[in-house]
Structure formats: C-alpha cells, structure tokens
Image 1 (spheres, one colour):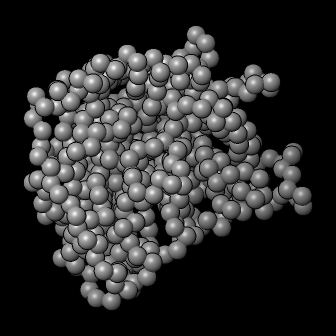
Image 2: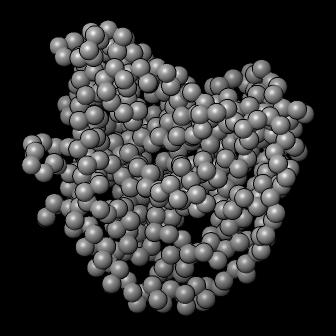
Amino acid sequence: MKTLATLDTLFVSLDTARWPLHGGGVFVLDPSTAPAELTFDVFTSHVRRELPVLTPLRRRLVRTPFGLAEPVWVEDPDFNLDRHVHRIAVPAPGGSTELRHLVAKLGDTPLDGSRPLWDMWFIEGLQHGRVAVFFKMHHAYTDGMGGLKMLSHLMTDSPESPPEAPRDRWKPDRVPTGAEMLVRAVPKIITQPLRATRAITGLARAVIPGRLAALLRPTVEDGPSERATGAPFDCPRVSISEVSPGQIRRSMGWIQAPMSDIQQVREAFDVTFNDVCLAMVAGSLRSYLSERGELPTGPLTAVNPVNMRDESDSTEVENKFSLLVPLLPTQIADPVERLRTITSGMGRAKTSLKRSGTNPVENIFDIVTPGAVELAVGVLSSNMAPDIPPVFNMCLTNIASTRQPQFICGARVEEFYIMMMQALGIGPVCAVVTYAGIANFSFTTNGDLVPDAQELADGLQNELRILLRAATDLPAGGSSTGKKCVD
C-alpha cells in the first residue's frame, strides 16, 4: 500500500464525471518488421509478460472518506489483465482521420474506479497493414515523462525477441476498509496546520506581496518591470477556452514534423526547441481565431508543465513537474517577432522559477485537504461553468523520447501521439513527443468548443513552414532585424 504524493492526489481531487482526468498514448506500428504475425493474442501475452516492470498497472485507488487525507494505491487482489486489454477495429478506410476519431471516442469513455485506472486497445484495420495501440491511463498515476518511462518497458531497440521475462515478485494487498482509512488519516489531520504553514512560507518566496495571482507572473530583479509571463484566471475570453458545462467530447488532431526542420529554426534564431513549439502554437491559434473574428488585442495565456525529475529518478513514475505560464503573443502579426517575444518571456520565467526554490503547484495543494479541493471543483463544474473565466487559454507540453527507432512485439513504432486530458478551464492541449528524428504533435480539444482539432494541428505545420522560410532568408550572421514575414 502506497500513499499518493501531493501532485498525484491533486489529479484525483480535480477529477469529475464531466472532466475526467485521464490521458493516453497512440502508437502506430508497422508489423512488417515483426518476426511473426502481430495478433491481439501476441500483444496481450507481451503485456502480461512485462507486468512485473509495469509497476502501476496492478494498483487500484482507495480514497479516504470525506477526502480528509490522500488516497492510497493498493496492489489490487482482483486484478485481471483481460479486463484492461481490448481489441477493436478502426472503421474503413482505416486512415488517419478514422483513427483520430476512434481514439477520441475511446478517450471519452470513463475509467472504472473499482479496478486499476487504465485501459489498452489493440486497433486493427488500418491502411497499409498497420496496427495501432491506444493506452489510456489516469493522470494520478503519472505525468507525460513518467508515462513514457513506464511504457518504454513494452518497447525494444530491435525487432528481435526481448530478453528473458522479468521475475514477478508481485503480491496483492488487502483492500483497507473506510474505517481503516480514517485511522490512517489521523496523523495527516494533526499535522495539517504545520504543513500548511510550511507551504505558505514556500509560496511567499514566489508571490509578489499582496497578489496571489502574481505567483506565476514573475518579473526580473534589477530589470524592466514589464510583464514576463501570465497568471491563472487572467486570460482573454475566446471560444476555444470557455468553460463548457456539458460532458467533455474530445477531438484529436495530429501531425509529424522532421526534427531537422525545427533544429534549423532553433539555430537560425538562437532559441530553444520549446520556444519554437510555442511559436508554432501561437501562430496556429492566431490563424484559427482570426478566421472566426475572435483574435484578442492582447496575448493568450498558456501553461507549460516543466519536468522536475532528477537524473536519479530512474524507477518511480509519479507526477513530478512545476508550471511556467508563458504569454502567447497572438496579437503580433510577424511570426519571427512572435518567436523573439516568446523567447524573451520564457527566459525570464525560467530564471524566476529557479530563483523561487519552490514548487508552487505542490505548495498550493498542501494547504488544503483533498476533500476541500473536490468540493471547490464540484461547485466550479456545476451549472455555474459558463460564468467562470478560463484558468488558461491552452496548454503545451513536450516529452523527449528516444532518438532510436523502437519496436513493440517486433513491429516498428512509426508514429507516437499523446491524447491529453481536458481539465476544467484549460482549453486546447498540445503535446509534442520527439522520437527517432520526428516531432509528433497532437492537439486534444473539447469538441464542443473546437469541433475539429485537426485544424489546429494543420496550423502548426503551416507556421513551421513560415518560420523555416524566415530562417532560410536570414542574412549571413543570423540577424533578423528589420526583416518582416507575412503570416
């Protein structure tokens, strides 16, 4: 039995029937590289074989009554792999569009809280003999980097058979009763005031006095007092990020881009990979909102999770991240100027995050109990939703995978996309997975607000083309001063 960490508990507390906080990964495989036919039974046997190193997959969530303390993970005595691994066929003609729609539909299905919070589908019927694997898991288990670390156990560096199966030392737990969970909560209740004091002290180092909203809107010491980043609930009202009162209906969109193209832009303008991705997102959203007459006069507010793992964090996959809140200067017409503005703001935001020496996400949710958070979210996700401003206009996260091709049951992984959760008030989510020389971009949206997420994904492709052209047109020496682009 294992108590959930603060961030893991956060995702349990924020989960509602309308806003289920699960995400997933989509792998498109080429079975022609496999030494034998890749069937559903072969795949299921492979997952069963790797269960000893897929540690979280046999853990079931048990909550503390009234949310008085963190839930716990128990090794589920009733675990049955066959209840989690499923077989399905994509509708004809089996192209990318049909796969996107199927994954979005599967993503809308709620997870069963009476068993471990994950499901996996073996998807057949794709064009050119391809198959796909869709893995769906609650965010309480892990974040993007942790999930990738866990799923890497299903992959190998070559099509050959994997080494000998790991030894299974797993032992089921007895599921604690509600009364036992309340007894476990007593130390938490007693120490809550002390922990809250420590958390508030940590927050004070990151907060401008008198302005909690400025927690994630730092400025630079001894520098200009210009706005460096955004802040929660301080966003322009645009349709893509309105808080919908209904059940979430996901839409998925994705593209692939050569890493060499992004690298060319990085080197030409002396920026980071993340800066280029943010600029691509800003350009796509600018085009989307302009076409609908919604382009605001000021920037959009994004949220950008930052991996906080040490190199020594080699086994645990629990959530470990902090947040940056960059401004997306969609009001700027010139794509290169947008990129420069993003780079400047991100540099200052990163400096401030390091200087604060605290993780504001963990500190905020160490002050209140999980039950208090659940109560607040329940109110916010009620019929009041249309009156609530968005927390952020969108989210961008990027995950670095291996540079070498990977194989599942001998089948080469050709594409790898992320289906992100749709959290209350956070708008569209763009995820980037870098893998084998390719950047795999995916957009997950609320289908009631952005009916076809592929429009946003296609906008990324167009923005990268514009930035590439600008990088190519740079004079020797790399200065873009005075050179304007047309978006």
